[in-house]
Amino acid sequence: AQSVSQHNHHVILSEAASLELGCNYSYGGTVNLFWYVQYPGQHLQLLLKYFSGDPLVKGIKGFEAEFIKSKFSFNLRKPSVQWSDTAEYFCAVTADSNYQLIWGAGTKLIIKP
Amino acid sequence: EAGVAQSPRYKIIEKRQSVAFWCNPISGHATLYWYQQILGQGPKLLIQFQNNGVVDDSQLPKDRFSAERLKGVDSTLKIQPAKLEDSAVYLCASSFGRSYEQYFGPGTRLTVT
Image (cartoon, rainbow over all chains, first blue to last red; front, side, top):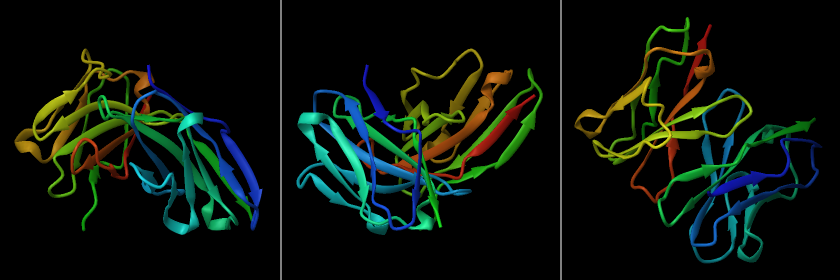
């Protein structure tokens, strides 16, 4: 069965620190990859997505992610985090076989001011 | 563009009672999803509609959960009778098609006592 794993359930950083959240998936075929974010009290919203082309994708609010096919990874990065980045981040993957979105368990990011 | 609407936002019921949730997707979105998100986990797909037909309901506990999408627009999800383990946030999402990004509503937080 397809699965998505996010390496850290909780991450605490200080403002201006660099961020990298890990995401690995298990599926050998073509995939579409997503990072969603849920700010406190708000609904899930798309941060960035990869369908094809340049494996380095840029999203909103300075976030980017790199698709490394050989490592089955789609890690999320931001060079300098802000207090407003405090949120829960979810990695999700759809396989070309059924388009069902498979979710990771999420990473809660807390930025200390 | 208006987002995905859900109601109610919160619901508290006793076990063995019934409850219904309503979702209005983004206009023009053919695909509608219902997810269950238990605290500390990523969303789990319950059912997926393409227009008014069910595409995937493999993870829907059909002995107690039911969903419909009459006329291919609004959808309702019902639980009857509710169990304690049904306490979760129920998310509705919609997309232009099965392979497109999903847009989420604010969710309904259900507490079963």
